[in-house]
Length: 432
Image 1 (spheres, rainbow, N blue to C red):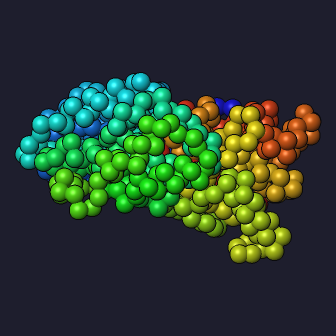
Image 2 (image 1 turned 180 degrees about the vertical axis):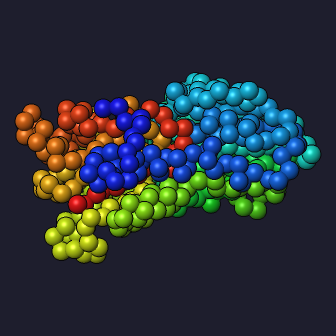
Image 3 (image 1 turned 60 degrees about the vertical axis):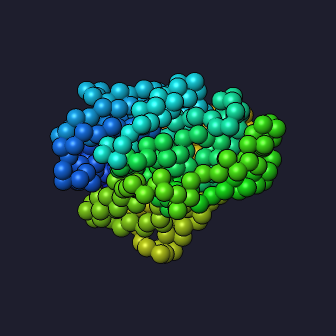
């Protein structure tokens, strides 16, 4: 189904639950889009010449918004995911691979480092950062090959490691992350504008913090790899054991001219959606924007809360919406086509036991669930009817990490295309 647009009047919101949920998702996206939020965070004086660099799924849309509001001369280079480009007049946009880095990402990272070399204290650098920047801005350090980083990245993605753990490893294998981009830019002044896609909105985790201090260590990176039983080549191990692999810390003088500003967060998106729900005359229960853990287990908790609301009117009474954000993980054990949001809804469908008063949406605000072509999926009473008609076994699909295939069969994939922002996952359960 094509869900790029959804319009309906306030009188028909609950009469059309699917359209209502889709509209909530679009509201979450709009609340975090650069065209809506960047301008208010820019300095009053925008007449200075600035060098622009950046990386992430929203990098191109951030660059476009910057060009519309910055008065002085701009030049520079940003990298975004394939298919996430936007038209810019002065800032070059290059596309590269995500979530596993490729040669294009490595080449543009080298060019970005060259752009900031030799700047003076009179120069201004604007760095535009968003989720996905870790993979897109890939420049291996210490004689490490890109193929080494690709293999480690793939293993981490399958391991169930949390985003902060993955980025700890990425930073210590990189010549550009963990504050090293700021060091290359010194003594220029750097203004970093960031869209957060990580629970807790930690500056050092967003795109692996190329312009900020990093509190993690190389020893921690090694421990993470060991904990997830990820085999690494001898050259990678030797590098992580070397003092040279350590990232920049808070007392590093190269960071004294850096400024970091969050322009959009998962909480911003949930706050906007909560207001929309309450304006429609129903209640909202916000579980938080920092939800982490295995997708299927997180779904069980959400399902238990939904059942308690429907059966016992606790902690709130229906009609209502349960909202949550954050980034869950999937430990891949099957060989199906997944996505953490599809996995979440599969598990939720099992938890809700074919009840008729539940509708749900789970989708990534960047428009891509994992590495598939959908943002996420929808769960409705029709889901169970389609499953019965087609003899689809929910438990089998969940065991095989094959949520995409299940919801494709029920025609409930949510396909929006790239949204050009990224504040993590959005989940809403409507209880009528």
